[in-house]
Length: 123
Image (cartoon, rainbow, N blue to C red; front, side, top):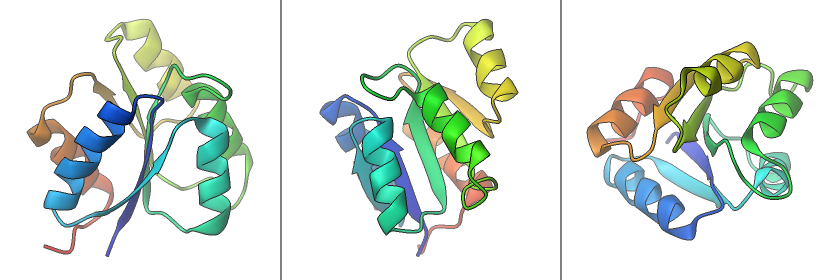
C-alpha cells in the first residue's frame, strides 16, 4: 500500500486531501510544516510528498531543498500544493526539483490524477 505524506499548516486542507486519498486506497500521513514532515520521514518511508509552499517554521520550498540535498530522499516524488497559481511559484518549485504542482483548491480528480502519476493505490 502506497503511503502519501501531506504537509500543510491547515488542518482542514490536510483532512480534505487525506480523505480523498484514503478513499482512493492510499495510506496517508500528515505533517503541519516542513520540520514536522522531516521528523515523519525519518520514522516512516513514504512514496510521495504533497506539500504546501507557504508554511511557518520550515516552508515547502525549504523542505524540498532539504529533501533533494539528502541522498535518502533525492528521488522521492514531491508535489507542491499552493494557493498561488502564479507562474513564478511553479517555476521556482520546478527549479528546486518539484515533480509536480497543484493549485489550491485542487479537485479530487486532479489530486488523484497527480498522485497516481507517482504511486499506485491499493484499490
